[in-house]
Image 1 (cartoon, rainbow, N blue to C red):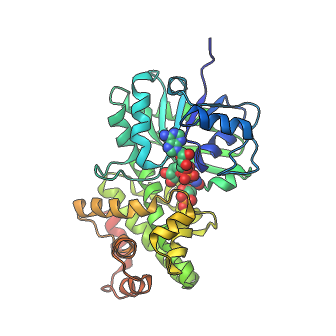
Image 2 (cartoon, rainbow, N blue to C red):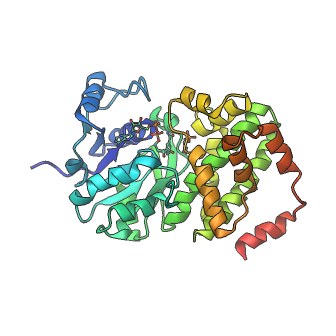
Image 3 (tube, rainbow, N blue to C red):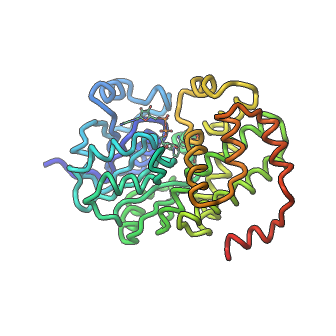
Length: 343
Ligand SMILES: NC(=O)C1=CN([C@@H]2O[C@H](COP(=O)(O)OP(=O)(O)OC[C@H]3O[C@@H](n4cnc5c(N)ncnc54)[C@H](O)[C@@H]3O)[C@@H](O)[C@H]2O)C=CC1
Ligand SMILES: O=C(CO)COP(=O)(O)O
């Protein structure tokens, strides 16, 4: 009989490969799932993911496979694919899932069209699976650093705290400390919305606006994230935690962040198409700027930063003019605004 996996990681990109590496190094019984046999054979032959993490060799205990039936029986499934494919990945698993399997989205996005968060997409696709076993993993997790063996923390959010404790113990290693939370929507929106701010922080870097402007941008960006999150039912304090402020700091500062780098390229005058092609990896903040804005319109929430970024990304507005327009908004009372969040 095949031994049940502790963890199945689906998605062979930067993040999925990193999660599989850190868990295997931590002694977990983990398998990384690719899309098909050819991809898995290529990874096996190379002994590493040469496209996304060259030089990070696969430990002997890291399994490689592609069959959804094997992933579906794991204790925990980590879906580390881009947000636009997570629904189809989940639909493949739906008829095969073991009844007690915990399913966590590791993607940071809001679905185009439905405007659902990733756990909501999963709950729909896995409609007969217990809702308390469906959640998210999100935090300050720049994959390249973690793959290099540097320490990190992240948050696993599940509404069923017993499931949260089970996931916490299966995913914790000496180099990855897991916190748990029951605020699923807050944790996942923290991860999704910070990418908008990271794109803008990259624009600040690319325009050479300095540390004061960037700090202001990050701080006001956090207020926007919190406002929209609360409209969707999140706890405001989640945005002060690892999945909010923590991820914001890491992503807005990191030379590795794809969203921040994309913003830098735009500020240098590259078109969105060229900058995305040069990146060659997913930058979720582009789509999330559009979806978050639609969500904000629905809930009547003000998102001045996301609005300006939308105009830069999709309407040809220059980053310089967007910056000026943000500076020239009506005067505000900072404390009153923040108190409004907690009222
Ligand atoms: N890279 C990072 O540092 C982190 C990324 N994330 C999130 O994780 C998600 C994935 O990002 P990355 O891995 O960085 O993207 P990436 O651009 O490195 O890789 C995406 C890859 O996913 C793989 N993939 C796509 N569909 C698949 C499928 N059906 N089955 C198996 N593999 C499939 C493909 O190989 C594709 O190249 C995004 O939502 C991102 O925001 C979250 C935390 C950290
Ligand atoms: O989510 C991330 C860090 O927590 C990764 O950010 P990027 O997608 O911008 O690289």
